[in-house]
Image (cartoon, rainbow, N blue to C red; front, side, top):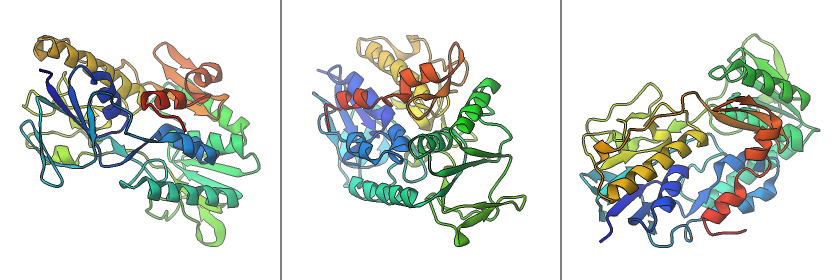
Length: 363
């Protein structure tokens, strides 16, 4: 009889793991949303709204053997996951993969995809009407958004603001220089080492009063639309309800070399919620899921977890940063690379065909 594995959370990590283990174990994937959103492509969808029909995908065809339960896990007791309606889901292993939240409209905030798409389309209309667009936050999403808008809508005046004195300071300096040069080539104005004075505390785009903002040094900038893109926050409510979990300075759960956040040997945490040494990127979580898939398969064949070589994160932070389909830069294991490889790996298609195949769905 196949062992039972419950995976909590149907984002990138949860769906990848469920798909990889489907057929090797009795898989139950628990997710409150009825549709999956390819968040990576939501950035380009702000400039190319026709993509929305290709990147919001039903879960129904994801698994051939396992099941997807539309619900929310409210508690975990040993190897039992309790659903919101009180239904217990018993299993041999539980993997928590609840992911992270991000500013609207790049990630679904609630459970209703219709509401999410409605809000996304509202932002697209705001972008369409605006001439002067200010993006606050020059991390991956902010920089990519500036590049996508500048590429697809060259008539717009795009300003990208960051409190840091350089782009991507946690990565090799070459990456930041390449991104800065290409954003400049696209016509994006960079304001580094700056903040917006009296910024509204909001995760949603807004129209500033008098269509103007002031930087921390008092310099005024015309702005018909301000898009805050401040960064991801791990969703750790479920982990916080467990005893003995320690969290790092970024709010991610500390795990051992086998992704276990507590003394329960059958409870695992993976992806953005887990402090593994990887950055919160697709590149990082893909490495984690691949390792965990192999480890669980070995365990299912009878090998004890303690006898499996523990996980090792990437030796350096890696990231893929397209600026439209043809520009961008990436930090890869062999070093920093530019537009050609970035476009080939990610920028040209944004992995859209891959995920449509994995979910057994075509728009």
